[in-house]
Image (cartoon, rainbow, N blue to C red; front, side, top):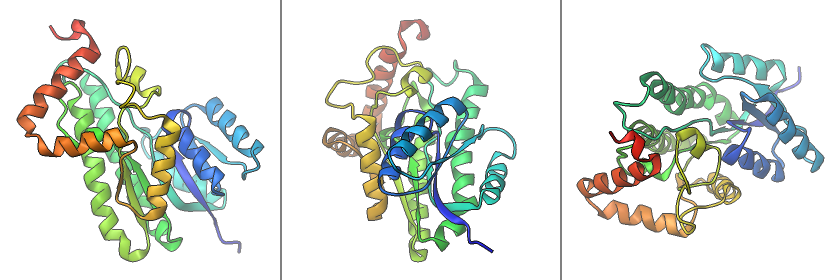
Length: 267
């Protein structure tokens, strides 16, 4: 019986940071499984990667919020004769607005995807990843380091991702598994439009291109670092935030998110 082929599974791979992570892993010789809801975009990315001379990725169209989606993915991988050596939990979304005025259903779906699905995938495949002495890359955010009025649920979900990833890193390190939380600052991707962010996502010095974010995340994972914060400016911002009381940060972040969402949501 042929042993399953080790692969890198990337969720939310159809655009933005997820697509760039797929390109980075492919350039380093990893066989890929690309997972998202948009089949056409996945197939276009898979064709691009295959044309570069890398192994043709396996495309899996999947809504991770559907009941039983993770087990369905596990069955698909088994049927294809592959199993995860690396898992990249990139799928997620945010919403700008005050928690009491945003849709409760959408915010609960955000928790479901950003927190529950990421956790379920990590735990479902941890033992398999350990057999291959691989790793897990969880995409968090600099939002993980600060409370976020105006995006309260999103910031809280990313705080969970950071905390969970660092703890899981300590638990799995004895088994040869690397776990890294990738914590980018503002990145010009479809995330901003989905979240309802108006205008420029951030000043130019704070924004880091998705390809640089992906490259930093890959290097951190392979080096076994618990966290990666792409960009010197964002590293400095996170350090400064660690020195500022939350009472002050609450006002700063709240004012920024109010400007992002526009005046129409403030009344």
